[in-house]
Image (cartoon, rainbow, N blue to C red; front, side, top):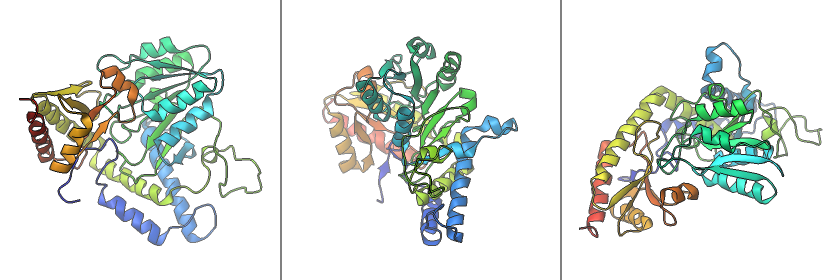
Length: 393
């Protein structure tokens, strides 16, 4: 792995902080048992770790409640395996035949596919288009809401171009229209502050393995205390085993079976590391590298950047193409010849590529992270320049 220039943090952050590796290893060697299934000291310790991580994440996403002296129920922070599972739980728990959902053309397939499956089975869906840069006007969300709208679900940060949507404005529309609001924060949780009450978010879905620096197989949903949703996953919980139907109280309403306990321990350590470094400090460092990357690529003959290039309302993700090259070929050359890791193709978000005119072959995506350096960016610019020059004289 030595010498690799990793610019694919939108897929998963790499490397993870050493404390994450150490915490997972320590958990498995010292406390690696299932909480809630026995009363031994190790199980109680594991349960305390899981409960503490629930509260840590709940506080992270509900800062205004703590500042006002209020209390947010930490049990409404439920763990899943990833953001995709979280989004499926939200959509399946709220949308049925005859119901309407509003979403956008910026979404990842983790939203597009479950919404389309619902539409095929008798629900309705409206996909709101962004502006040329990729931003959604909250008033266009309002125009899409119907009498039977049961959910508005929006991608907070694009995994293709890095645009960050105005969830405060969209949340205000949802409050005024009395529609539940779900936010996919896969690209933004741990990058930019998210306050559920201030943005009127009913359901915040997140993944643990990106900017929260946890292991893969971690994620969850933070459910607002006033939000209502039915459970759609059933099974063992470790408590009240005599009940033949799944429990209604949180977190069990949306959890079943053994959690990724070791992963949650690593997620807890990752969140601590992020908070110690400072969310804003990490974000600004990444944006500085993004600015350098965009400026360098823009000067290369044959290179085209797609989507916004602004540095406000943005995470450090960008996409480009090169004249006379397929995006996948650029990715292969970068990998094989330069040890630079990127992501090519449609990045599981086909509608935003249609919007930007990059379908069907997609783009090359680069996304620096907290361990990226100026030298990494300089090497990437130089490599793209050399590749482009071979066919664009």
